[in-house]
Image 1 (tube, rainbow, N blue to C red):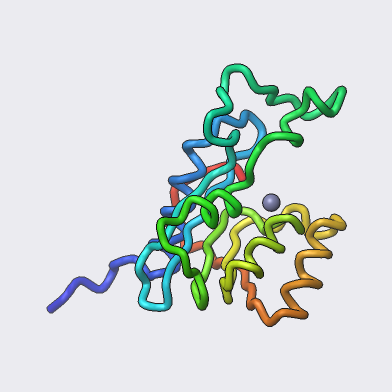
Image 2 (image 1 turned 30 degrees about the horizontal axis):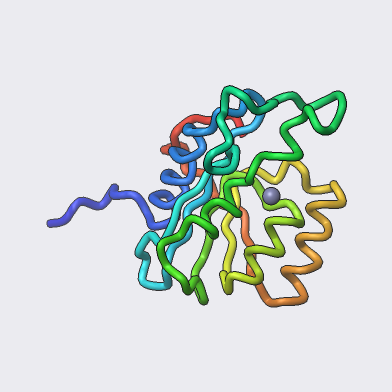
Length: 159
Ligand SMILES: [Zn+2]
C-alpha cells in the first residue's frame, strides 16, 4: 500500500516558493514565487532581489528617505524575477505560487506572460491600491486567483 500522508501539489509548490523566499537579502520582506506548468512541472523560480549585476552590498535596502536611496527604486519582485528568469519562453496556461499577493506591476507581468492561475499565501496588502488594481486586472483578463490553504506542514516564514 502506498503512503497516504504525502504532500499535495499545492503544498509542494508553495513550499518551494517559501524556500525561494529564504534567499532574499531584504530585511523586511522575503517573497518567493514558483511557476508551474499544467503538467505540474516547475518552469521557474524567483525571489525579491536586486537586478543581476547590481551588487547587493552597494544597493540601498531602506524603506524611507530620499527615494533614490530606498529599495523601491531597484528591487525586482519575486514574480517578475520568476517570469523574466524562466528558461522557458512560453508560460501560457501556467500557474504561479507566490508567498504574497502580487502588486499591480507584477500583476501586469503575470497577465502578459500568459499565466492563468495564481495561488497566494499572504494577502496582507489586500486593501492597498496596488492589490485592488491587481484584482481588477485579474478579473478583467480571467486570471484565476485563490488563497493557499495552509496545512501546518509549511516551512515557517514571516510573510
Ligand atoms: Zn510586485
